[in-house]
Length: 302
Ligand code: CP
Ligand code: NVA
Image (cartoon, rainbow, N blue to C red; front, top):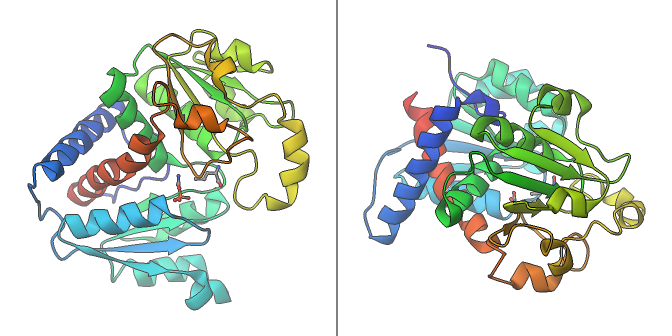
């Protein structure tokens, strides 16, 4: 059977994704009860990071240890990856030694090429185009706080970036409506929007996108690799901050998510980020661990 990868949310079926979230919730409960599993005993995850990370690195590392396995951190700075060894060679070599590989990199084509040559499952731990692992955690968090996202309205406010693209895929896989508010010139991929136009709409006014939303999410205005554009983006995104004033337009029961790290006073106000009436960002960050443990088990067993 062909090896299964997780490069975008579309690599799993909606029912596989629902089961995976349920398993993440179960693993979280069992961990709290002190019940341990050796589901990945003696297995090793290779972790390739071409960009910085706190949550992704720690959640994968801790997740593998909790499942009875281990992981190794590979940085381009001190491997041949940083000295130009071709991706296809690196993939063939590493995938003969480790049991799964997660990669955080730049162009999405890099991970597609790596996966094409890999004998073991490859997990997208963020590319310039998608961040599917974060959406597993976000959906788990919504399910825990409010139940199924099916039929709900989600507002994405800010950059049409990798997180926004994964929200578009999530809308499709979990059957919700997505309203995106972004300044002109910062839209998500037109092809992706067009492919999902039955459930995805673009607005210029954040109030229009957030009106009656059940779930509001945002992310930094300048992603990793766009540091040079920070100043220009600060100007273009002025007016797109998620704060209490904007949340007033959402449904009374709405919750707020941010993948973190957050820039208080830019894309989100400090008050909103800390307001537990709306903000579930710490649960969301913790759920990276539980949801990805379920993902690792799923990919290993299928
Ligand atoms: N949200 C997220 O992926 O965080 P890190 O960059 O810290 O991994
Ligand atoms: N859009 C952000 C997400 C960080 C987790 C970035 O790519 O830097």
